[in-house]
Structure formats: structure tokens, C-alpha cells
Image (cartoon, rainbow, N blue to C red; front, side):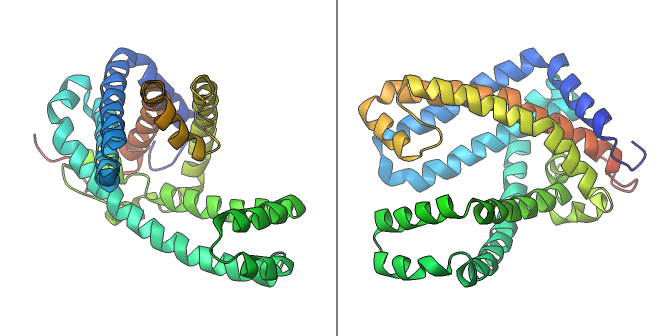
Length: 287
């Protein structure tokens, strides 16, 4: 790519990666989804270990993503032999970036909250104070606010979405760089995307928004079969309690779809961008 980001070419490369490796991606997706389902089953049996199973689940997702990155960078045969080490490195890199994003979003939330409280949310502050720690009452007030101020809610959402997309685009090469260099890389890749952040964001939006909507729509339809509303987190706990087998089947199917139709595309896109944007001095270490 000669240091730039041709959006259509990048999107096409990601689609081509999935098409040419569909069998490998399907097998890895099924294996990853099966592991997530097992972890979900353990969480149902021993909910007191929820924090541990959440961490293990995130590690498993990182491993599947690392497998896809390895297949894109080196081929599926080599990806099979290095998935464990690559996965742990990618998880560590994403944990570092995730902590950074948490701090940024927390500060942004405070700033946005002050602006909202002094502006459109001001008439509702007394009601929120009266609601106190009653979550249902607080939610009812916020629902009334959202219904009366849809533009403010939309701007609030877009503010955070924009920050998230721009920062993650600036650090988008961290995962493929970690796999390629066989060491944990995060902010070291920040300078590699200088001047390319907006075009990386454009490529991600063009490719991943449709993929996310498609996976979300299919997941929503499958969820309704077992009384899970993917837009309402409360229904997950209810379905898991009343129909654990059906809920775990939902977890498995949606896991396969997410890995195969979203994560694989993202791996293809990020690895292609990495190959084009990494500096000449960032050489791949010998095997």
C-alpha cells in the first residue's frame, strides 16, 4: 500500500482472506465457540467464579483472533502451530489498550456528564436525586429523558462512538504487529498510523458495520427462539436459568457467527493494513 490506506483495496483484501480460507475459519470458529460455550456452562454451574470465567472467555476470543491473524500473515498451517503463544500475546496487548481506553472513556464520561447535567438533563436532576439508589426509578427517569431529548442522546452516543473508533483505529495495528513480531506491542504502533487514522476508520466502517449488523440481526432472530432478546441483557439471565441447554446453544451458534463473519474479517483487514503501514525497520523476527 506504499504507506497509505486505499479503503476499497483494504476491504477487498479482508473479504478475499475470508473467502480463500473459509474452511480453516469455519473450523477455528467452531472450536472457539465450543470453548466459549463450555466456559458459559461453567459460569451457569458456578456463578461465583463469574469474574474468572469472564477473563478466560476474553483470552479465548483473543486466541481465535490471533489464529485468524496468523493465517492472514503466514498461512493457516503456521497459524496452527503458534496459536497459543500468539493468543496470549494478543490478549496482553489488548488488555493494555483496553485499560488505556477505559481511562479515556471514563474521563470523557465525566466531562460529557457535566455538560448534560448543566444542559438538557438539568430538569431531571431533582427526579434522579429522589430516585437515589433505586435502579428501576433511575432507569425510568432516564427513559423519560431519552424520549424527550432524542437529539441529545444521539449526540452523547456519537461523542463516545467517535472517540472509541478514532483511538482504536490509531492503535489498530497492535494485534497483527504483536503476532508478526512475536512480542507484545501496543502504543509502539501509534506512530505507524499517523496520517492514516481517518482512512482506517473509513475502511472499518465500510467493512465491519455491515458485518456487525448482519451478525447482530441473525443473533437476534436465533435468540428469540430461546426467549433471549439481544437488546435486553436482563433476558440473558432469565433464559439461562429457565432453559440452560437452549441458552448454551444460542451462545454456541452466535459465537460461530461472530468469529466467522466478524472477527475473521477484522483480522483480514488489520493484517492487510499492518503489512502496508508498518515501518521498514519493523522487521519480522526469524522463526
